[in-house]
Image 1: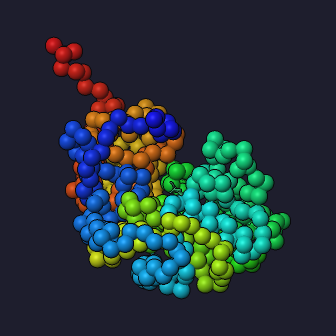
Image 2: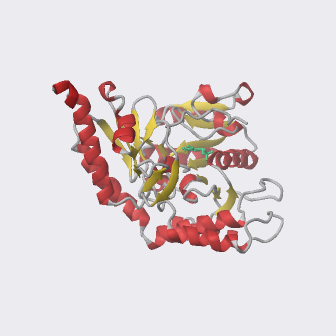
Image 3: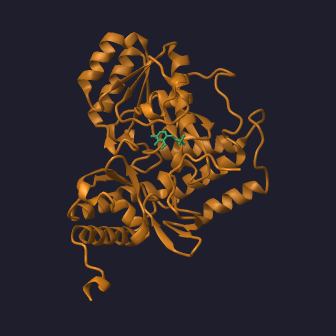
Length: 389
Ligand SMILES: Cc1ncc(COP(=O)(O)O)c(C=O)c1O
């Protein structure tokens, strides 16, 4: 049987991973400044995470949500403590799209309304509502098309005010990434998030903070929305939550009340997923990784500023982007194939850095040196030895 060929692949097979490094089937070591797509939070195969999953696997891996699963409550308590949202409620799912799907659905149940405000360059996932609020027509199937979504420019307070003044009574939710990831590392301004909070309060709409990529400590705060000093009504989480174990969830403010049957899923909150998620939070706490993300992020940005040839360095914590000029369009490819360094991208010309929150200075230096060397080489290619002879 063939695999359904939807992913453009690098010709690399990863067989081993540890911390911020991965190895291919030829034994070549790569530095992972991409965190396996922002997923690796505490470092690949962290021993505490491995042990926690193994221990759980030997007890019970899965039983359905029809019985008590005490480890879910244990996770909720720990998450409340680490995120500071202790009075919120946790609903667990398995992927980022599913988290947003449930958040949007819940907002609609809660308000009895249909309209959603989303932003240009947003990415919220590929399930039907999640893709409908994603600003990329190429991945919206005809069946996902809807008139219920209003796209506004990011950080445009006037446009947001106008939208609420004309349609406020119909708006169920505003959904926004604190830092747009796929869209190219665009930071939502604090004042803009504060404006969303105010307008949602005035019009009784739900503020959904998509924290799938910018959450879980990556920005240097637990949720990047925390920089604005406001609380969202629903936070969606995935990627870093399981450090590679598929686990996701939504945090729901206390005023949104549950009803039996309102939401549900088979796999969400299974024993093994909770064990993985607990291990992640325990390591985040023990190794002070949110502060580390802040410090390392500043260090990377300061070092990037000294690199000639890249523009517009931006982001927060360990969610960093910079623009690559057309002359260096192969930079990311060359970093991978010549220097064995994985980075992320955002089309058309952004390199995204999303390393593990535990990335160390030596690894950052390794990356910066390779970046400098590669840019110098691309700007001024050295003749090959044979050619010189
Ligand atoms: C901000 C954001 N939301 C949602 C998603 C979708 O997550 P998943 O691929 O786990 O469905 C992503 C994935 O990249 C994302 O970056």
